[in-house]
Image 1 (spheres, rainbow, N blue to C red):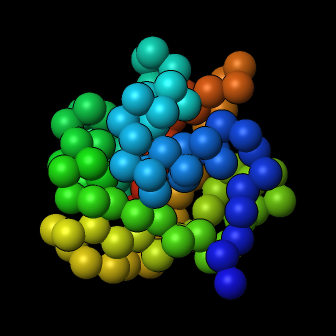
Image 2: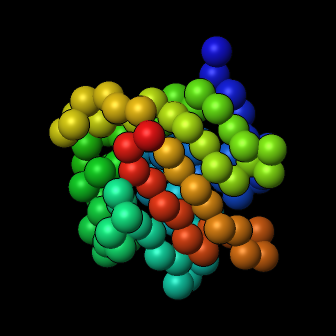
Length: 104
């Protein structure tokens, strides 16, 4: 059964990833958003292009925290296949200012 985040920014992020919609994705982020993968800060634009959009990334949400800003998901893309991942979001003024992901 797929869980759904109730935080509007996080829900829009997941929807944009799953739709492969770059414009909608970047609209969920603040202009100065940052991210990390497995504890290492990455160049957000380069990482997103490689790990989400050019590799057909998809998130199947398994679990959502009470505040809806931490998710456990099966993340699948054409580069790495499927893996269980954790996503944590910082939301500022209704947009995501940072997200952290890594294997769960």
